Structure formats: C-alpha cells, structure tokens
Length: 220
Figure (tube, rainbow, N blue to C red):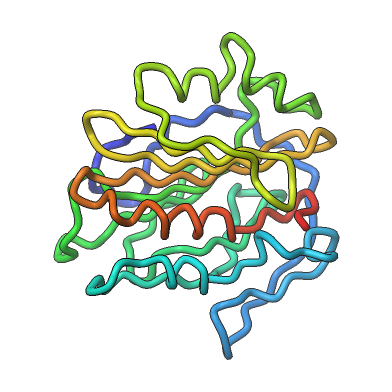
C-alpha cells in the first residue's frame, strides 16, 4: 500500500485490519552491544530466521549509501498484545498508528515515496484461520496486492509460513513480507515502498523485513 509523505503526531495507515485482540507471545530486551535484540519466549526457540539481526540488511545495502539498519523492539498495538523486533532504518522519523511507520528525514537523499511500515493484519477475520487460503482467496489481501502491478518476485518465507512479495508499479517498488501461523488471530506484515530512484534498496529492505520478528507466534 502507499500512503502520503509527512506526518505530525500520528500516521494514518490504510490497514487490512481494524481488530486488536491478540494472543501475546515472548518478551524482548535490547542488547546494547550489538544490533540484535535478545528474545525470550516461544518465538526464539530454535530461531534461525527472523532473529532481529540487522546484519543481512546492512550487508545488502549498495555502496555509497548512508542508510543503516538496527533492530529494536516495538509495540504494534496500544494494549501490548502484539510486539515485534523490527530491523528498522536508523534515524528515520517514526509514527505510530495501527502499527509503526518509518519515513526518511527531509534532508535524506531519498525519493518522496520511500518509507517502511510494520503492523498486524487479519484481512477482516481477526481469528485463527487458514491464512494462506484466506489471503490468496478471491478478495484476499495478497490477491489484491498483486492486481495491476508487475510481480518481480514471490516466494515463501523461511522459518514460518508466509510470503515475500516484490512488485513494481508507476510509483516504484513495493516490498511486502507476511508471516502467519494458523493458530494466531493476526498475521505479521512488514512493508517498504521505494521510490523508483531507490529501487536499488529493495534487497536491503527485503532482508530487513525478513529478519524482523513477531512475538505472538513462533518463528524458527
């Protein structure tokens, strides 16, 4: 999805969900010695993917860019039922509403449409369901995401059920990573919109979203 640049106080996001009840999960504490966030609880058991490690995202950045990523814990709702370790751009402006959104500061040499957001989603269900069937159904979120765009890549996530979807349209490139568990009532959604001049950042933002870790279902 695309939303307008610039926010004051809060960011209004067009979300696939208006539900807020959740399952809860593990807890997270920042490790001051590294960019990783140490995670406890079910999401960390045997996790090899989605570990909150900013290294792969930083390694994928093109040379000459000042952009860097670091992992931080964020609440994705007001009740604290959903949180995540997000591999987020360092120094970007942050807005919170139906999740968390990041925009580059005005003095950053990036395009108007470039931004990142992380939130929960339920595609109107907000209860445990067969998420793959729901999201790819006739009116499913992923079905709608692939309409009237060029699909550059679509593949399964590692470490959990989910999908990595990279598309292009007249505005630029969209990176979308969804993770889900059929026993959970919401899925995890990490998305980056990249202006056409910033398309070379797609690999880095894909790595950042894939490394970001929801806490209300296990990944690993």
